[in-house]
Length: 86
Image 1 (tube, rainbow, N blue to C red):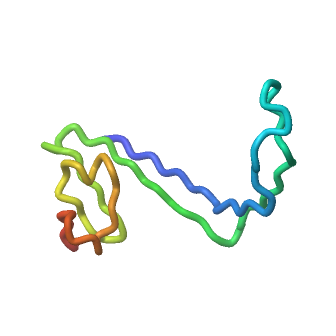
Image 2 (cartoon, rainbow, N blue to C red):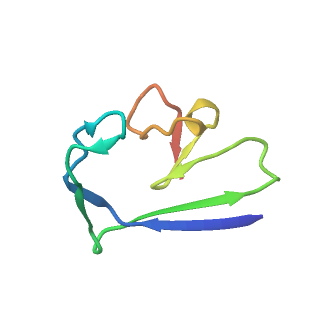
């Protein structure tokens, strides 16, 4: 079993990309300015376990039933997904 964790800080775009000034050279119409929020973070941990019969996602103490929810993560409050509390 191997576990890997990644931590990322949110990035807020103050000035965003708004198209090209020169479409041939793909020069942006304006520069972009963004900032990272150091006090906030997301933490994602992935465990590779060959002993599992199928993929499983645990999101904030909710476990997916596998299948499509492992391909497209949906929150547990969506009734068409099958999640159970841990």
